[in-house]
Length: 95
Image (cartoon, rainbow, N blue to C red):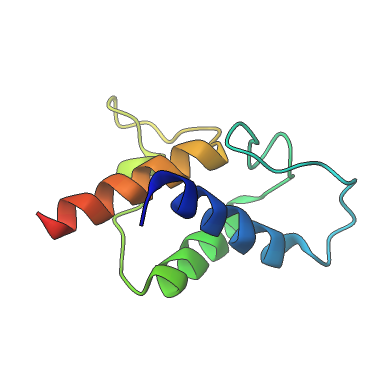
């Protein structure tokens, strides 16, 4: 799966999660932020991670994504950051 396919899959999963939300029509892209742009709560992020694991049929170590190098939880994630992380993890698993 290439970078664009991973990104598109992440966007599709987010669209499925948010389809019943009263969000204004915004175009989702790599720069879209979960909290600031989409209003995701921490519970929504957990749901997203579970849905992505199911879609890709594998478990991911999301703590590597949400905790920075200093051990602090990150306040914000973009769709592109999530897609890049997933692609790197899938590539790492193939090696």
